[in-house]
Image 1 (cartoon, rainbow, N blue to C red):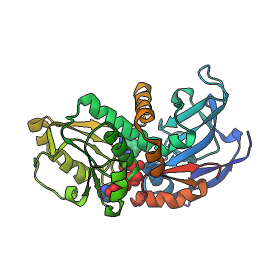
Image 2: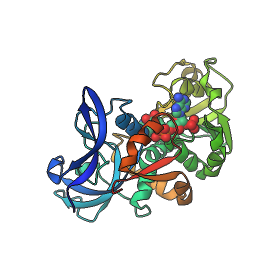
Image 3: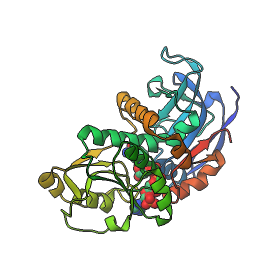
Image 4: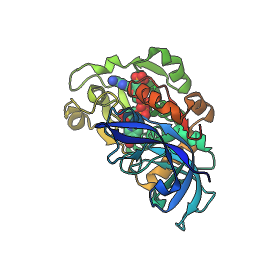
Length: 329
Ligand code: NDP
């Protein structure tokens, strides 16, 4: 264990919330029961909002940013965890109300920790991160509801983190996946992940009728807004749509007709406070079904000092796939 160490901390400066590197010691950390040495964290859309200041994510200041982390327990007052245990933490209010993963060390509540599956290195776990684990929660939710294997499954925000992992998982499970993207230059990348077809996201962005031609047996949507309303209007009878995100807007300008005339189900996905059994199931699916070569293909690695630049890029929709943050860099 070595202190002092660096962390990306959001603070109020001249009335504005600014995230920057700060030096911490163990005495600065919260008094929770498990101390973890963090190997890596990751960059999610919510991290982008927090670090860039584009969204008010941190609800108390100062706040160590980073909504997830992977690492090793170095000290524990909990009977459930001992030094040397490999752990992953997603959500639980990290970077909102609790100090998060953009740090070399963090003190955490024992009940937030999940054992890292043996099949993953910490870097691979953060290549998945909250975005990938959310994709797995969404696919699990759709399968619990029931997906018609014969119908297309749509993934919106396809070249982003949630979208990339969702495509890989759905294709591996045998579905015909259609990827919706605003970046036609990423078509080869999306096909390599398993998309059978790539469509222009503009085709979902315009206001249409409340019930349109039935196209999607199921969908994973990370865009929200008019896109989600259109996806619902194009869902097949008894189809299901997993709503994960708001990259395109937090409104839902549609009608109830898909629900009451076609029996379409809208499934909400909340990764932050998902119950532990759901988390374990999602990570088991990722361990079983996510091709490690594809995971490497969708991943880049950056350091803590790169986070402010990357934060602006992900909010602008310019980041492809997943970014691991090596907190020692
Ligand atoms: P990314 O930025 O990696 O991906 C979002 C993608 O959405 C972009 O790559 C882009 O895909 C598309 N997009 C961006 N802006 C727009 C726009 N204005 N209109 C239409 N499409 C757009 O983010 P993540 O994958 O990490 O997260 C996706 C969403 O899911 C976010 O809103 C995030 O907050 C949410 N989320 C929710 C979670 C939950 O618990 N419910 C957990 C994790 C994430 P393309 O270029 O291919 O069109």
